[in-house]
Image (cartoon, rainbow, N blue to C red; front, top):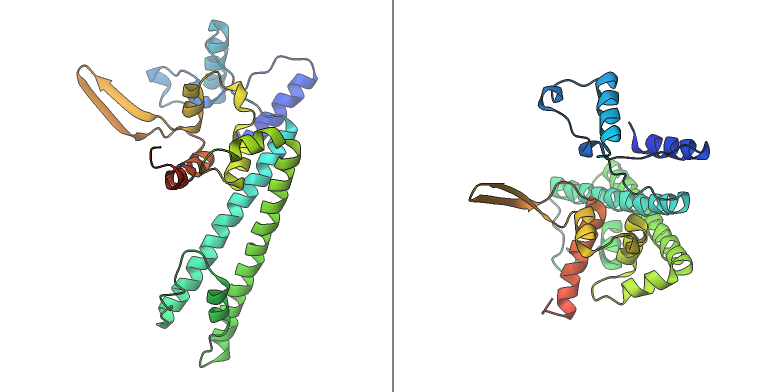
Length: 246
């Protein structure tokens, strides 16, 4: 079932005064014989068994304010992906046409000089001018939306989560967007009893497989909050610039 539908049903059940528990499907134990059989009847039987035995642990369900703030942060993340896609398409178009980008302008961050260089490009036929212009218009629109959403996000976190926001900003490598991301994706960090719980939730723990004396680790666990994990990894690389000991 869609996560949004599950959360809405959870809140509806609680409004009736019922006890509701939201569980990660991966946490529901399934016998080997049910690995290749799935139906509503089988799932209901498994859930009833787990609830009866008291083996189910509910996951954190954010309140409506936290959930809608998270939506704004993820909207920014979607816009960033769209912006990268448009930039890649423009570079692919230039490569297809055999146009070399000047080395001093060819950088990950598109400066105003590079944008002006793109706008001043002229081609043999107007059709290509229109093609590049529409791509640049799309880039400008999405870039503007990213800036607007970023400003709104920072302003909201500074106003409503002022203490936590500035505590996070005091950490080397943590910028405004990373601080907003931690607040939006993780909520109140005080709900985690220790650092291990936080690392497990984010997905900063290794995948381990041990059989007897044979121990294998295969990178980070696939069970993670991938958005905030990527932001924290980037923040870590930035922190190394301030304190190499870290």
